[in-house]
Image (cartoon, rainbow, N blue to C red; front, side, top):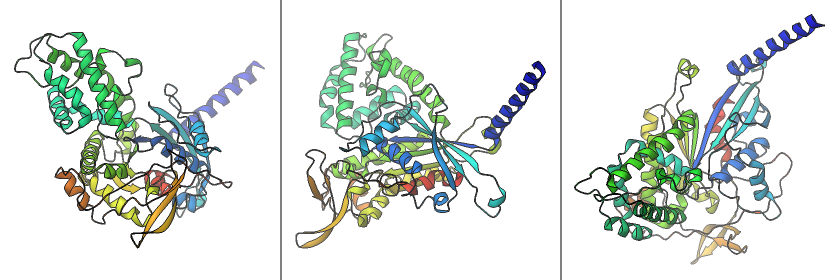
Length: 471
């Protein structure tokens, strides 16, 4: 009995080692980072993405699905037990219930694992066994991504650039008045430092609520257990002629550097640097609605975002030692369902033009990038209506504010993106020859057939670009 138990144990050990070896060398794991700028709909994107991968009836442009090679897709426990799990089930229930509603935004990092069982394609596919792709979806706030740009800036550089940007923003008036009244050369008084930080945080909150995309430092808005700590108690200041030791300026500088070392770098090391593929969601339509300055802010922010990535392909040998580079980056303009499909090419072209500078740098480094317009969950239907005697393409949905049906024609986007980007770069106050209007729609009540995920626009194209080569 003892010998039998020993041999059984050895056999199980060999089988376990074989399984581990198989997963290590034959299964594939991809880490997909998903982040979004203000009001881009990140939580809805991830929820709809997972739902449509589990029930793929609405994913015709996912090549492996169209070819019938995906045998199964299933949720599994996430590999990182220290991270919260993305609450997929609760978010899906909010979107698909009898009284559908948009789910609450996620305000911290989370993770979810999807596993695909796929029959290989190609000439020898019938001779090859199915393989497994593990897709680890890493959800993190866009504010944290923007913080990575701070790593290359001194406190003086960051303070000067931030104060210059705030000059053009009415919501920053109270903070600017307080910052200008301070003498950074004077000895630090903690109460004054806290007042500066609190007023600066109030500005960041107001800017985010207005849909601004460049609200950093991000942890000021998502402090967690760091709330009230010195590492979150600093603010940009005009630099005085003298900066003696123990002065307000020097202490602000010290705390800024601590923020980079204790908050930004750990995020980069522990999470961001391990990402293989990345989605950056942006509310491009919302920026156009706000005006030229919002469009220029978005263009500049997108360029800064790409600088945080380490784009390009990495060798097979390097990957064995843990090295990773982001190989594919998708920049997606969300809420395409707020436009008739006739205007989708214009929205995609505008998004691509916003990213032109950043995209060329990534392509040059070897990473594949793509701009796309999509709707994670379609909340409208299309109609054609008369406006000033002319038939125009419009959409109809249920207003979020009143729950009443409404018809929206947001205005015609220009076919030439330069008509928007040129006045934005020149600092125009408003669009000269156009007026763009947006409404906020509630999710529509759904009736899904077996095997179908929620309705969307081009979510299947997004998945094909991001992971299609691994299926």
